[in-house]
Length: 201
Image (cartoon, rainbow, N blue to C red; front, side, top):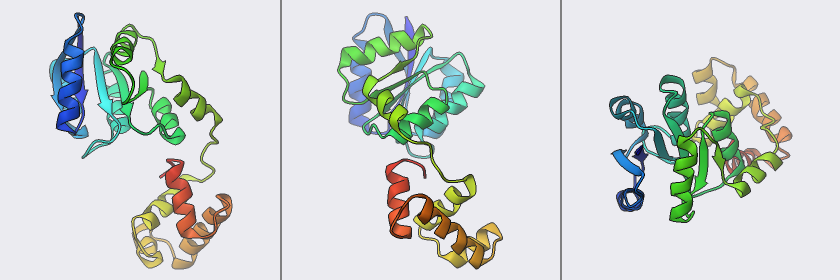
């Protein structure tokens, strides 16, 4: 019997997934959670074979939670579910060493088979998602540039960012100008859009 932990914040979706998986003779959902911060404690308590994790969870996103599981409970395999197959997200998931990555609208039998494959140590990545990830360029921004652009995207002013990061306002403006140039953006707002669509923020 493959023991599964399911992390999904939408109650109806979670209930449907639990019901579908429990119909399989060799799969049992032993625990379910609705937020990312509960995944690790619940996994430590129930020790599932596979954790199925929605990518968009409150409190902690699915990829971060999967990465923590990989580090602290390496015997628990991770399968990420997403409704958006953005290439940047796929690359983040691969970098986090997740064992599987599927779209939420995959057929029920495909999910069950993915759980079986992941449980036996194989990696399962939706072929279209994998192809889009390989075709996508790496983020051209430095970690500092990403940090500053993320703060700007969250509505912080140049003065706010400068104070928070102990930089001068002129230095912050220079970073933002460099970001706009690197992303071939029209302006800061366009740079934020490009970075979000590429899942670099």
